[in-house]
Length: 371
Image (cartoon, rainbow, N blue to C red; front, top):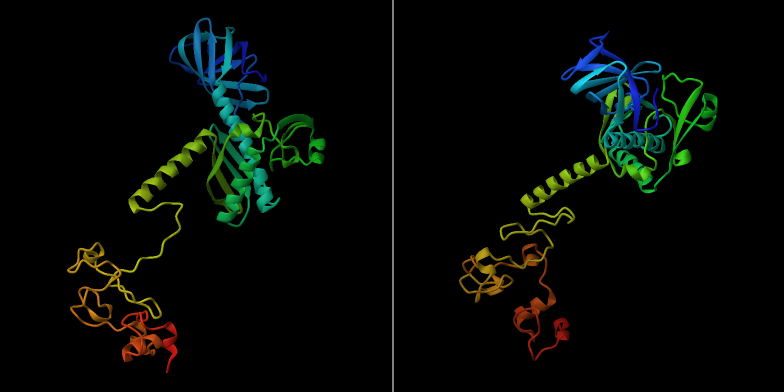
């Protein structure tokens, strides 16, 4: 018999070794123990079994697995860590509370992912199997097409939104027909009795037939991050996720990798990609500004004349760059065959405009348009 308590006093009904009942088991033995009453959850419904300790007056047993081979019979696989245990001994059975709570988080997260699949892909994406244990969950579902990256992000977002909204979790035992009329989802191919247990998260958001353990509120799950999604057969796909502290550790490890890469590449992940800066040897495209980019030695005044990066070599006509060795570089409009602008034509003719781009002190801008 299974109880909702995580610790209770009970008695040893049988000790089994290698499939045969034995009168006693001693330190170092790995045996199977049946208790008259147990707080341990046996593996079922995709949820891993509980772990914990069984202590008696003469022995301490470490529970490593719990199974339910037939109805109403719970078998505990234990290792006798000290002393000896025999049938009829009075013992105290205690479930590992942390392990149980972490498993409950993963199981409740599985229900959230199932609801998110329905909301994103539709009701055809039905559960075809699941497995959850502390910090980890996976869900198989019927779906023929690959799930896009956008849909995967939406599924993860819906599940985490349900976590943040602190949805209440409730369980009710009712008739199977009543549960079906309520809209509770059942696992395809699973056999149910006349009385079933319905688990609701946020009322109609998630309502399923389930005998597993769950959190009391969705916020207790903490965090969920989807790690993979892919095909596991014809018409079946699998989605995997980490839950709670394991999800946080996974994201922290990814952040560390991103930080290392950005440090190596001298980039910041939040910055947009910057355009490539043209070097002094890069070609000038048609219509671009023609101001030359000096070599590195001239950028800080280290060139032959100490000029700044935006000026040509002193005395070089037409803004020739350092390194042109006196050759005059024609501006882009001249190289492209376009006519000189008016102010340049006047400057070349010496009609009221001084050398360079601006009028001489005695001139006026209007003189640029004089015939």
